[in-house]
Image 1: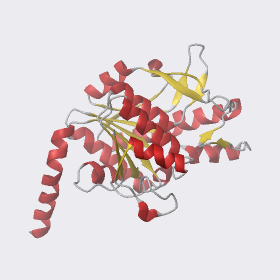
Image 2: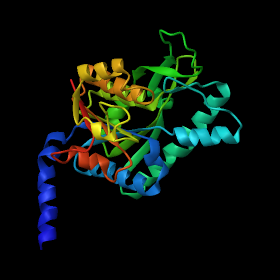
Image 3: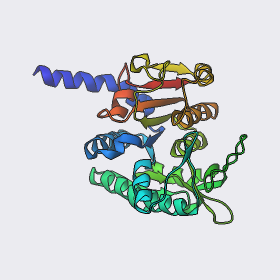
Image 4: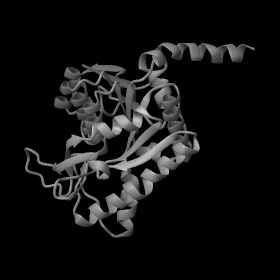
Amino acid sequence: MEKYIEKADILIEALPYIQQLYGKTVIVKYGGSAMMSDELTEKILQDITLLKFVGMKPIVVHGGGADINRMLDKFEIKPKFVEGLRVTDEDTMDVVQMVLTGSINKDIVSDLCTLGAKAIGLCGKDANLIKAKKLENEKGIDYGFVGEVVEVNTKLLDLLTSDEYIPVIAPIGTDDNGNTYNINADTVAGEIASALKAEKLIFLTDIDGIRSEADNPDSLIHAISEEEIKSLIEKGEIAGGMLPKVAGCIKALDNGVNRTHILNGTIEHPIILEIFTDSGIGTMVYK
């Protein structure tokens, strides 16, 4: 009997969070090591399915860097990264689009549907979901066919999420001339969250969250403000692949998103543990 009472207590702990988030939009950026394990994938997609069935509006934005690298290796194309972003020439762009939209996206959609959800796979080309332009930067780095988001078709996403569907989005964008761009998935998640004024933006990554000392797992910060993040960036404690995530958090908060989270996606049920429990497991970033 005690174990059943314990389960009931867990559900009651989640109740106020479910009430607070009912009808709200939650953006989940899914990628990293969690995508490499079928068992972890199932747990995360179970979390996302649960969000939908308790009345939230989840949207999934996924990456797929490891799969892209494996396919590039088969074509004998050497991957190149600068400041956490993939340099994308024309041949690389073809591989990126094939892997993200043709393989990973449909696998996630299929797995969600198997769990009882009604998922639909999209990329930025569908109904002009993500209008993009070539990424420019102050340092003059040419990333090739790497883009930045200009506009998000929020009407399409509102239609889908207000009905029974979970949109699953591959981070590919297009411009007015039909050019295709590879866009960092963290950036896309942040832009979509901003455009929709989402309640929450959740990044699933390979570490527990933001650390005050980059190489010290015990220095995990459970809650941090924008200003504190900027200070850590200046000190060099936040760098590399974490930069697009924290930049996405900051921009989303500046554009009306209520809370952003960076979680370890290699833990079972990370989304539920973070947003349905009092203590949480990762880093929450607030305005």
